[in-house]
Image (cartoon, rainbow, N blue to C red; front, side, top):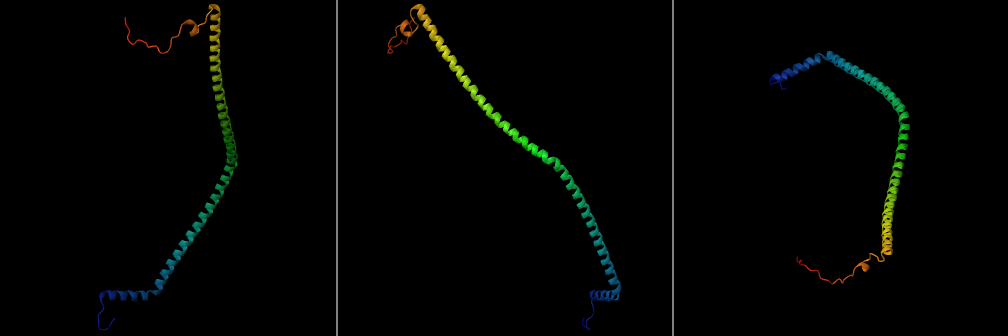
Length: 162
């Protein structure tokens, strides 16, 4: 500030504020120390709370681990038995599928044998009946013995007359 110029209102206020702060130095330091003490005590309380919470969480984790251990004592044998049963079931399913396939082959083969047997039996009965008829009549029922066959070049009439 030059001595020739007058002070503005804002400069005056600022200067008064600085003078007031300089005169209140010990009180200001006291307030700052109290604020610092309050912050430190809050931080200590928060740290103590965190420590207590961590201790409680560790204890809870210990009991959870004990519970898991107890459950695993029951679960692991059950799981092993289940795996054994699943393996046995898969083996039985495989054997059942093989048995069904074999049975189906046997059924199909039996059907084929039964049908061919029936056909063979029918042919044999037909021959036996023809032979018996030939013996009793003196002639058979073969086409050559019962009628005279004509040549295949015969034309059949297309118009019928009544």
